[in-house]
Amino acid sequence: MRIVDVCEITQPIASPIRNAYIDFTKMTTSLVAVVTDVVRDGRRVVGYGFNSNGRYGQGGLIRERFRDRILEAAPESLRDDARDNLDPGKVWAAMMRNEKPGGHGERSVAVGTLDMAVWDAVAKIEGKPLFRLLAERHGREADPRVFVYAAGGYYYPGKENGALRAEMRGYLDRGYNVVKMKIGGASVAEDRARIEAVLAEIGSEARLAVDANGRFDLETAIAHAKMLRDYPLFWYEEAGDPLDYALQAALAEFYPNPMATGENLFSHQDARNLLRYGGMRPDRDWLQFDCALSYGLVEYLRTLEVLRQFGWSPSRCIPHGGHQMSLNIAAGLGLGGNESYPDLFQPYGGFPDGVRVEDGHITMPDLPGIGFEGKSDLIKVMRELAE
Ligand SMILES: O=C([O-])CC(=O)C(=O)O
Ligand SMILES: [Mg+2]
Image (spheres, helix red, strand yellow):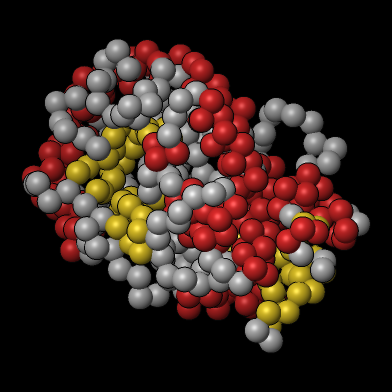
């Protein structure tokens, strides 16, 4: 058993939307395939992965370093002999050979993308859904029913509050009961009016989360906290710079309601610093680390161990990114749920065909691997890469 090829193509996921920090008019993703020599059900096993929105495609790093390290490793050094499979931890170690610690830059995205494809292949080789494999290996019971919320509410040229309300109504109609919108890309007064418009629309049918995308300095973050605490929000996300733990900690004094952050922390060491210094509260706050941006599931397992050491439950994690990899981790390892972007970043985000949101939850179908084969528009572009 061996990996015979690693393929990458950088694809557009562009959209004319903007948050408080960036627009998505040039956004790309890396689609990768890890091709094995294993055959299951008459078909060669190929694992697939891609990176989440917000960071760009990683073709340069993958082609210059990580692909070759996998292909040049002795095949037996990547195997899980006890299970007659590939060992994701060993593939990870091969990729990270000769990489210094710290300063994670974008290599965590390149490695996270490839790691996703490795886990997809491993679960396909075992012939079971990744979430069931994870639950088994960690002595847990899988729960295929996963909470999902609808992320959107972006700034968009000419978008009035009426359009924002209609967008949110559309998410409710599709079965969501938590929706998210952007803040911080307009004045406090304008954002207050946007929030009130959405709250008037959703009433008691749903809760609203808001996301500032790390835009605010301490003073502005506090000014917004004082405005936002008037409303029963689901969470106040990424108020300040993701690495400014002192800002996050100070904010808790002004904002007693739930906060969320972590999508731009890319290692278990950064996650540990957040828990050590960020003043996050395990009884109400949410952690959004996204394995596809942060060295993959091999690293995410280390992050979950850090959480355990600091007294946090995995159920406080609702990852960023809206991909099926995190849905599997949620169903297999007991996370609190997952993000989804009902109208954005297609065909990469979302659920297998036929999966519906009901009462804010989806139920994972029993598909081998991550489940990409169940999403026809996605598996079509994947197979064009490697099959
Ligand atoms: O707008 C973005 O960069 C995406 C984001 O923060 C989120 O999904 O929470
Ligand atoms: Mg966010």
